[in-house]
Structure formats: C-alpha cells, structure tokens
Length: 169
Image 1 (cartoon, rainbow, N blue to C red):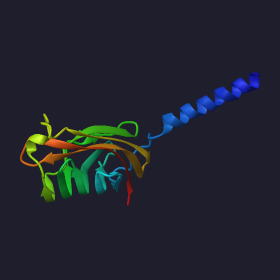
Image 2: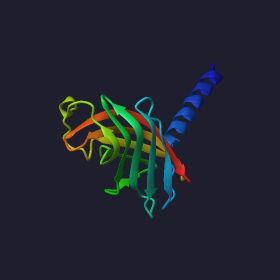
Image 3: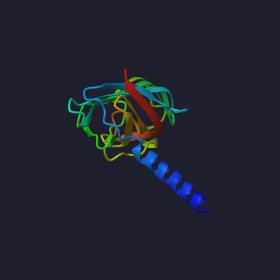
Image 4: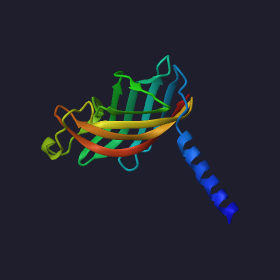
C-alpha cells in the first residue's frame, strides 16, 4: 500500500512540474516569428507575425491578417492591423496584452447591415487580446481574441477567441 501511495505522489509531482515548465522558454532576441491563427468558421485563414526585441524582453511589431472573414452580416476579403508599439513585455516565457481591433487596412469590405447593429466599443485600441507562451526560443503559441472594426465608427464585431502558433522561419 505504501508503494502505491508513493507512486501516486510521484505521478502528481511530475504532472505539476510538467505543467509549470510549459511556456517558460526565453524567446530568441531579434527573432522574427510567423504562423497561423486557427479561425474556425469565422474566416478562411489568419496569420500572425511579430518580432522579439534585441534584448529578448518584449514582443514588437505585432501584425494580424485575416482573410475572407464573416462577422454577423459584415464580410471582409482581407483585414490587417499592425501594432508597432507599445511593446508587449515577455516575462518567464509568457506574455499577454490588449490589442486593437483589426481592419484599419481592409479590402473588399461589405458591411451588409446598419452600423447600429454592432456594439459600441469604448476603445478600439484595446478591444482584442493576445496571450502566448514560448515553448522554446523559436516556437510560441497561445490564444487571441479578435474584433473587426466597423470602419468609420466606434463599433466592432467580435470574431471570437482562436488558437495560434508561430515559429522562427
């Protein structure tokens, strides 16, 4: 019986150590990451790009591109947004930050309904969110919440929260 309990305690300790270690790698300073966002049925495809500062302490130049998206009756052939700053701090291999709604650069934009059908947003610059962790100095993954800006208004449509993965190419 004593060996059985010792075995169970060891298994629990290993699981706790494994979960604590995930996502604690330091990113490669100056690295350029690119990858995909799993958009589900909200869009045909999504990509994410960012770089790491020369000291490795922050994410810079975050860019999100979404192709062929649909949100309520709004459709957009391509929506892109970049965030050069402020830099997103990386601590213990992890990061999280609010991000702007995408769509400041859009192609084939069709609203399809009144702007009043979309919720008013307090700040289009902080409506979305990105969370991530570095599995290694050259690989990262996480979740991103994306809103599409209803152009020329203070309104946006939430596309949803999606998984993303990126690596140094």
